[in-house]
Length: 336
Ligand code: ASP
Image (tube, rainbow, N blue to C red; front, side, top):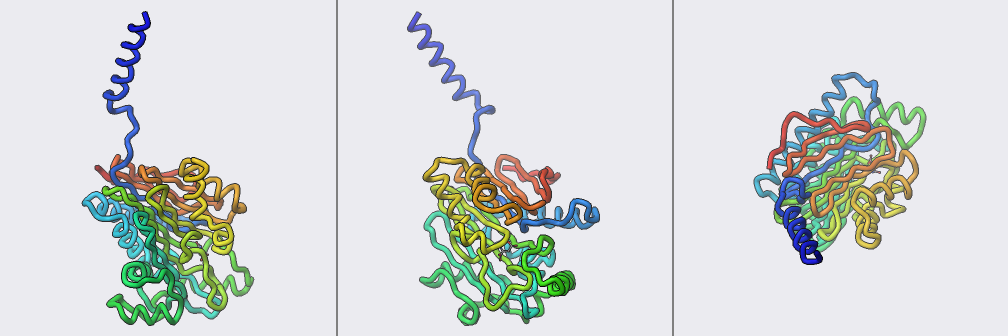
């Protein structure tokens, strides 16, 4: 009787192990992104919602292509963010919000989960793709964060494209600035749109990056969370990659990006549990949101705003984007 039991148990275990399709498998590669927390209203014109959806899908398609063809997670993060920086719909690069003086000061950061190497820039005014400058800080210097004039000097030593500060201006952001000035309030829902990308490549390495124009009406050299490693961006192959969006001061105060990684490592929480804890237990309602990816390629989204532009794709065929609560499965399947 006892030996029969052991044999059946053995057969059962073997069966579970070989039945294949029902067993959970980690993704070979995976990517998740956000285009800012605090999205357009649900009753915004259909065309506008569609335009955001398509922009997210384009970005996701590019990231998925990089990873599917063996590119690194750092390449996926940088290339997707560059596309967002060129897109006037998002608050980074062209389309960045206006500061108190009616100018643009851009922030970006990137982190390599394999080595914990990282680079960041803040208060950049003429660099077309701040995320690429952040990556150069990481790869070409022994420092982590360059600010303002220093960041611009560093950019002079690179071949990165430079533009007039007015290149970043769009009419929509100017209107938002004028409205905000009339009400002199700093924390808007409509003029967010910071972008962030987290990726896992087929070599098993995580990376995270974030790029932003900050908050409309921000004052003298104000630095948000986006260029602060541990606040707006974090990546560690042992836990997760994280990119945040929202009221930067709160994300800095609570070291939100790092706290997601720490909660996974120390409290053994899943990436979704750790993300939800940071956004819903630590931060206040409407402070913002984040995207995160664990080392198995599982994506987590968490936000306390009405919406967050976001998307996820992986080698298992996931390809979906979302603006408000529900995700929209897109027609373009990512494939393995
Ligand atoms: N977190 C950014 C900042 O505070 C803004 C945003 O995500 O919308 O600069």
